[in-house]
Image (cartoon, rainbow, N blue to C red):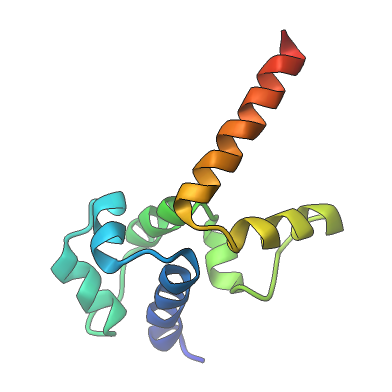
Length: 110
């Protein structure tokens, strides 16, 4: 798949798996709805900084964005397993897990 097809398809895949609407993605990234629509519809290619904003909204790295959902670059098997579980969560569920993990870490440090 060429880059011009991959980027829109990957954004749509991430939105679907995270159950995030384009409106919500626009709010999370600060990218206008019309600009995001042009990217998803293949009218315009996003800049690297725009892709970075999208990655931040989904909590992934740029390398994970381009690796796709089936490939997990430079991770141990345990990290891959945890990331697969993480990727299956909605944004709200991720926030809960993150808060839980932070509380465990804080408790251990006290």
